[in-house]
Length: 185
Image (cartoon, rainbow, N blue to C red; front, side, top):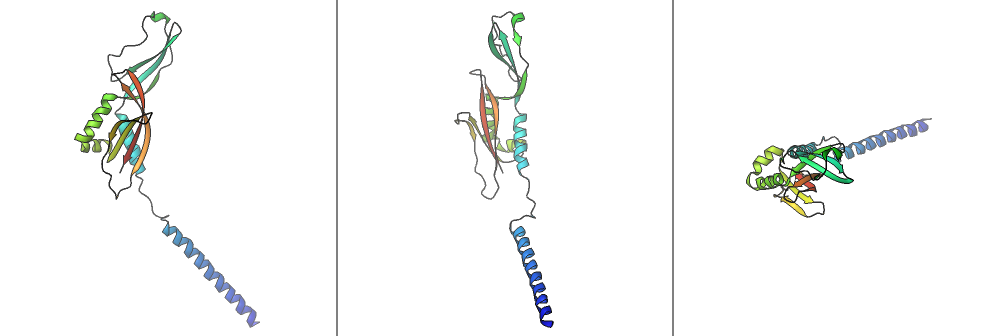
């Protein structure tokens, strides 16, 4: 009878040791992979950058106008006071307008001013946008419109984001869709 109890006791000890080893292994893996480490949420800074950048945009109103079966897109801009409507030669009573669409838009001059300030007053832009940054604005076809670059620190985490903007080129009277790539640290 003693012999049977001995085996049971050894089996219980082996089970306890196995459970301790298993729990220790799981805990070690959790510590190794930093599961308990709360990461600093810097991705908010890139969202805040985007929000600050877009606050500088003007506004536009787009209305479709139908005059004698010809459809026009009529834009008005908050930064352009002398815009002339393309709907000409129509009796105003014959023009049918669509529901207006509102949005944010940059003038090409605004972006040129930001590009110039990037080289002359970077610290001012940095405090305005809330962090160090690199900004690249490209046309839809991928060619560069503005490239504002700086040396990135090697010891910092870099956060990147792409977002789309509309740009009004008043020289050619056209609206350009552009892609903004921003990197912050």
